[in-house]
Image (cartoon, rainbow, N blue to C red):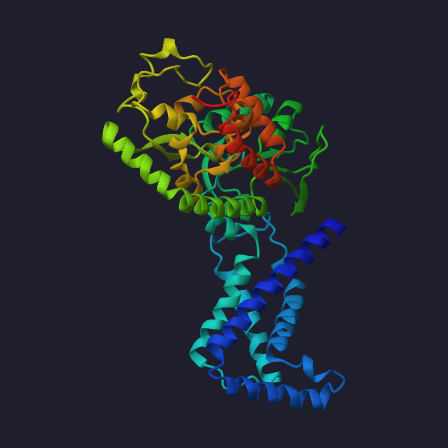
Length: 478
């Protein structure tokens, strides 16, 4: 195990120690121990044991809370000594789409240890009904933090909603029972000609990605050892999960990070270039949720004023829902304050000659469809504030490429499709640098820069620059 892995293990261990210890002490004080007298009796039992077996420990260190901390620490050491808890192998076989077996394993281990500890430290007289509940609480917490899948599901990206496509993999193949696939939904399976495998796979992924959200690509090479340079580069840059199965050792032209395992003589190569996945996604979602709730509370008076202004000027509806395309092609309803007259989007074709932007972008100077006075709302992006709801729903992030219409997405080539591989956002590099850009190439340039350099630090940096950019005349929107 390298130093980086050791540091991650220690951080995770320390985090669990703090969380479980805090929950346990709080629960003991409020539910398990019925009175202060009972807690004092437990303390006397500990003092007695100290005098008999551990007289070298100073009396001031003997407390019920310290013993609970030690009990949790020893349990985590035991738990971390098992490969089951510390390593979730997505290339293991899993025949059930359920976390029940994992929960039961942790539940039995925790409770056999817990009651043994209670017996050793003479923790008696505890509330039995609340103790029964406590037997479930800690295993649930441990299951939540065992891997990022469950937390991601809670925060809006459940693994069972992810989809995959396969190439040259038989319908009855046992490989379909790998955990990586059994927890996800297959939406397409293709057979390709050996001589045209590269172009066939690239074209099929490009086609289906425009109508479905694809998260995982599985390719069975049979006895082939190489993908082909063009296909290899495409898969590395596509920012998705990729599994390659071959009867021989797979060789690559490029140097990149991947995991390789041999199971029953078959080679599995797996790499995950989904840059906003797992712990990275969890941290991004926590930031999004916290800041969105804060912004909604702080801006609620302004939202009310805008709402009634639109009602007075042009009636209802005030908030419109537009079909947009999100992460990996997922379609969702994006909220906006209505700043145009009803059915304005249907007039795009009639006003096409007035469009000053290129590609799928559509914007008209002094747009005749605007409600009177709504230009100010658009200039300072106030019409986009309802998208904070989209952020809470996990359809969008505070920072990312702007989501476009599905009809626009269908015009993308395979290079443009990269912008769908991160969560769309309310603001981004474009908004703080060149909001009035007239060509989609500029949009794409900033989107790719964001994708290739994404980090939580970059998101925070963009957020801090967003408000000042609203008042910068060089990059103001219209």
